[in-house]
Length: 322
Image (cartoon, rainbow, N blue to C red):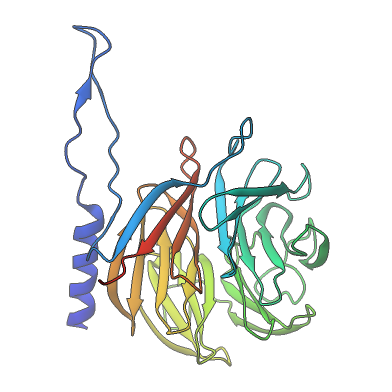
């Protein structure tokens, strides 16, 4: 218990501490000076090099809207989800623009984007209460939920404003149905319901309050970003509560093959790295890091910013030991 309290206090000190005082500029002598906004981007233990404004947009095609999601397939492709059509922007890992797709109206509210093990691209749409599966070239393959239909915590076929999701190695889909409900919904790869995890709003054991993201570890455990409770909650593969530990998680969750857990949080402006349920590092990304992914091949960390006036992607690359 004491260790957890110390970790929480330490993390709070790191994340809440204000950035260095910003210099000021004045357009003309005597005019009120406006502060320059200096937002720190760094790694607490200097393990990552942070690159803000990653991605080379083509001439005449700005982001045009909030960037809510990002996904890396480990094969050289990164997809960024934007709330302005074309919704899906495709890049190489070095930031070179490849293509864009997703005409206006295809998605009601682009929220999160994820690669499946088969290369398919998944996206959540809170406004329409659905989750989509697309082929890499944008063909709609599957829809989970019912467009325009709201479901409660007991519903077997409808969501209410789903947030994040993840796809297991076997193709099973786990949806964080959390903006209104308090549950994780588990489907097989064909979209057949397997089980509901959680389903009770609160702060107690196994209860959730705005589960915003979900990930699966090597044991098949279900890891949930219980964002309003500012904690990570762990369930076993059957959906039974295992443990919880402090962690800001109003963003995305990713578990890498070695069971390192990454959690982004828009309010903290950072990605927290956990190993064995303990804080191992903090990467300050400089914006509101909503969407999150970790390239399974390179270990590069990508976040998508939901700062209204600063859309884009920030990339943090592990520093290689010499």
